[in-house]
Length: 298
Image 1 (cartoon, rainbow, N blue to C red):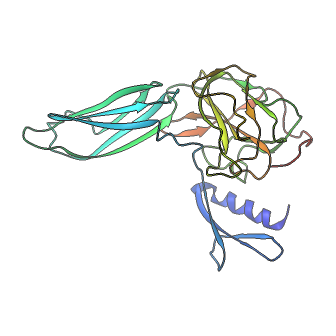
Image 2 (image 1 turned 90 degrees about the horizontal axis):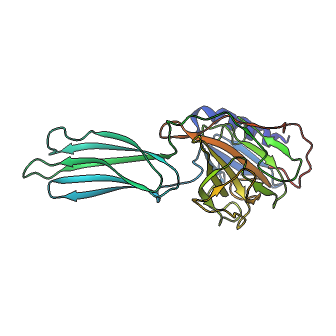
């Protein structure tokens, strides 16, 4: 491996415990990149974080509904998956007694609206408060069931290029147990396990605006979720809310988002309590050590 890549991987490994750091890259006249913790003239900063795969702020929202003597707090879940939410009320003033908890945590069913709290004001007073709203897809009360995953693609054989706890990008809780499999763009990607499609992205070109690129997220019956990343733009053939069976076509592999070559990034996640984390999984046949029959490497 080239020296500058070895240094890059070493720096990434050193950053793992904090899950966030900044590297500074410089490129010499021969096009060789070097990386350092320290800024230098002309260096470009690169922030490395364990970023979420997708945002759901526009589909999981908190609403405050004032009424004559107080305010009602409701949470709306527009996703086709359950969502765990937490409402924290702070700087609460002029509330009637202790008729409302300061911290409320609930699991919202798919496509639902739930009242989280109702706060009544003292007679003749006006309520004052601050809210903090957090959420994570999935129900943390569900427990993963043993399952051997068939390969989520057709064709091959293909080569594993980064596995669990990989030094390049699989070092944070959300992607620690992910696998990267190098394969030519356009390889059919199929559901490794049946479930409900709960989130898709199909419009990103190249690196785009999000590291996941185009993706499909499938919620399994046991509450775990399989996520298929870096897919080809326009290739996703399933929609949110659609039920898919194991082996059903989802999309085609690509090279979008934070990808340095054509490959599929496959990860299984679950809600561990207001946070999505990757969990270990196994394919139903060996993968590591297969020869590389691909057109490129991630």
